[in-house]
Amino acid sequence: MVVKRKSISKIANAEKVTNSKHVANEEAEEDADMQIVQVEEENKALSEKELIAARAKELKSMGAGEMKQLMENLGLKTGKKEDMIKSLLKHEAKERVAAQEHKTKIRAVVVKKKQELESQSPSELSKLCEKIGIKGLRSKEEKVQRLLVHWQEHNGVDNALAQIAQEERSKSSGLWTARSFRRCAPS
Image (tube, rainbow, N blue to C red; front, side, top):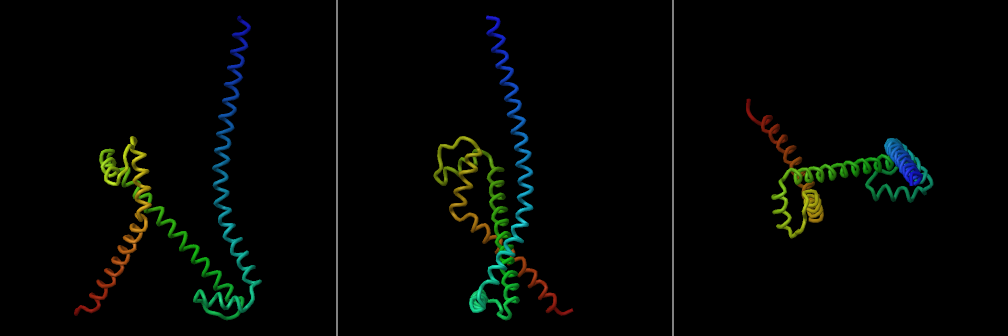
């Protein structure tokens, strides 16, 4: 019986060593994942350059008639083929930047709404859930998640973006009118 106990303890020790190696491997993989993320960020910048180079090559292979029609459809000036390629690449780069800014705004709106929901008490969240017909949720996280999904599905993001745009317009028009009144007012 003593031999069996020793063999069992050896097996247990071997499992501990295996588990510690497994944990060490997982930590190494997590570190590698972090490095991969940093490399991916560098690759995104490279991919932008590669994208521009590939698009330029594609545009150079395009016929002059096709290029002119494309430029006219986008409302850009036509001219020499090289100039059209440069202006089209600039136009497409501006569109990519605008799309990225839009994604950033959407993310900010969603994060703000989530923080707003998380700041409420569980009883307030329960009332909101009942109001929209969601029942049977127990944890605060579940309630916040479901309310956030409901908000997104019912044009919450679009409405929030529209409200932000309206506030920006009213601020800029308010500044303009205040400036114009100062200019028009007698001294």
